[in-house]
Image (cartoon, rainbow, N blue to C red; front, side, top):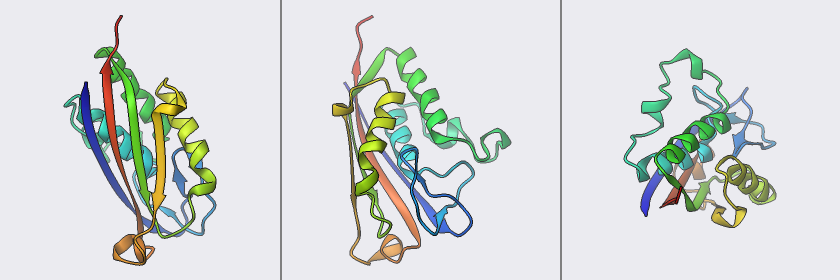
Length: 159
């Protein structure tokens, strides 16, 4: 078994879509980033890469590379899944937290779980997504950005 931890944060800005967990979440602002800035998927990818000591998303998808400009993070997650699959591992489970004052994430969490489970070729029961606010504290509480954390357990797969 291997365990990895992931964290990501992006600033909220006008003129961008808010994509979280592969879902277009209705909101007046979106997240700023080189790719689609899907903060949840970025944290998930970092937790998976960390579990196998494969670096982080910046190593695999640098923001200096134009081919990742506007990239769909779900496609990047597919690449990460292929890496762990090649190493002989599969998802044991993933537990994630989205930290955002607004918008409310609860209506979208089931679809986020389904998206992640599908790309990672695992049961939805292995994927947990939850959300919290910071009670108006810090940059997320001030609605300046959104953060996400993820922890991942990888298990060796018999081939």
